[in-house]
Length: 554
Image 1 (cartoon, rainbow, N blue to C red):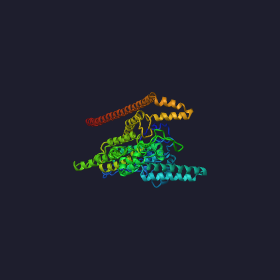
Image 2 (cartoon, rainbow, N blue to C red; image 1 turned 45 degrees about the horizontal axis):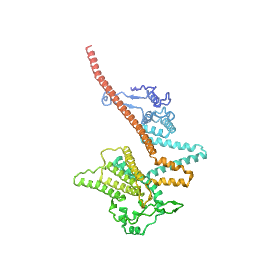
Image 3 (cartoon, rainbow, N blue to C red; image 1 turned 90 degrees about the horizontal axis):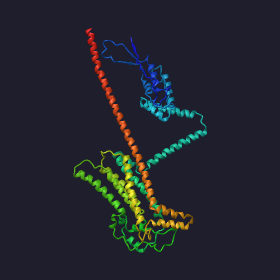
Image 4 (cartoon, helix red, strand yellow; image 1 turned 135 degrees about the vertical axis):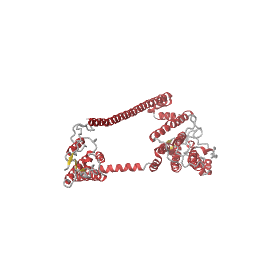
């Protein structure tokens, strides 16, 4: 005769939801409790065994739950962190599949689909992901929800204007997402950067991202100088002597491109080509008494002197550094030292070289306005050379690098020591040093800074209503007290900002220490609980022994 054994579990009904909701009728805790109480009569059936086969089938248990038991498990294991408005009422979904209850299972599945349809997209995805079902069943549920949503949308009598608005919104959203994906794919060197990041990590990637940032800086600087300096001067060039033209024609074009001499020495590339004329209504004004052209007797017939200036230095040192620094070192280590390991890409040295080259470009832009063009070409060549050299000559570094902190350090080094130092040097040159008296836009002036003062004075004379500009320029620009005050305010702002960052950093350290202490406390409590459990396990056999001994004596 079969003996029926039912297993019940006493669940706490007063457990609060993670969202602090009291008395929620469709709470999953109550759902599990109802399922447990509903299965008291159908829990497990254990058949009596013959004594002959008792040893072989002592642990055989026949479950009455069918293969559809996954549905009740999926519902009982569903996530409990949904909000009250998005939490479905799925009571009674403990489906026991057999031939007679197939229709009931379909009804309950339909109710589950309806409740999933009422959820938001994110909550629906989380709930399906948490269900202990196979991928095929989850996909089937998802398709049922989507098909039912489309069918209900088509059945509803929506006005024509609402349908048009719905389709327009979907089309605009689809177009916007497509545009964003297209823009992200059209970023400069996106594929190459992904390849570098996949093979060498984010540390090496930060170097190439920094190189791309410098390229964008130089493009912006080139647009600024070309729009306000090079283009107006190229449209109306100054008069040149025949001697200068003949000299430029006799020079070698290939050597000129490499050295920047010859034809380029008398072009918009250099400071001496620019005149001190004023353009009004698209016509040149009459030259002043000292507004002569550049001295043509000085010829650039020593290209070796220019071999280490401006563009040539950039390209030569770039080639030599890549060739000797990485390629020859790899050959030497593999051939002479018999090492199979390739050298590691030196991020710090390469970044310092980038900062050094950018500092030279900022220092020389005063005397060569188109120097950012040379820097742009150099960075373009450098990117592809470093990428090829990295793939051929280097291996992955075993030292981890933090890409976000490295990028911040690179920008800090670029701004404060490099840009600030170049700005101070250029400002000192414009403020104190006397420009050339024979050529250049500042000829005949004591300092370059005096050009601004003369412009303000002429503007005040031409427009009497702007008389206050000269006084403002005198007290705000020429007066060093104002500059010192503005610098002091700037430093105070930087100081307070650094103090705020230090305070936040200390708070983060305290929170990390608190987390570590709580972890240690939990470890200590777990160890204590394990010790207590072990002691109880040791004591329980001894008590059993004493009880057996006492019963035997009695």
